[in-house]
Image (cartoon, rainbow, N blue to C red):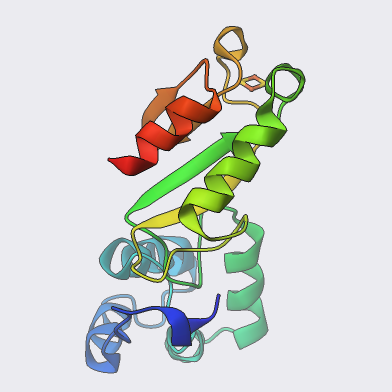
Length: 159
Ligand code: FES
């Protein structure tokens, strides 16, 4: 993501990162709970926290980075307050999912994997939401929106 375009991006304070990391000092087992705690606080794991974590837990930086990149639910970039997940599964695809994704990209002005400059939305795609009968679908936050069409998509993002 291009941080320069984000309007209300604020680098998390190193002091707070150090404070959190200090709670788990030298406890190698605590890597996952520690990065989760950091993500819960900042919404993501600031890259500048990785060497601090590594040093405190006596791990290699590459080990910490490897663990973070292994888990799909850990993020090293700021994310939007609402995550939009457009379904790319077969049922949705055959019922116009590709068009829905194109329209969502257009409305948000971002590509898949990106976050809007105001940090309101992050756009992702998923293999199947599990409600194929409602295809085509997407999820915004924790709400599923089914039987989508261009008009519905427009209305959703007008709000
Ligand atoms: S394929 Fe889209 S919900 Fe299953």
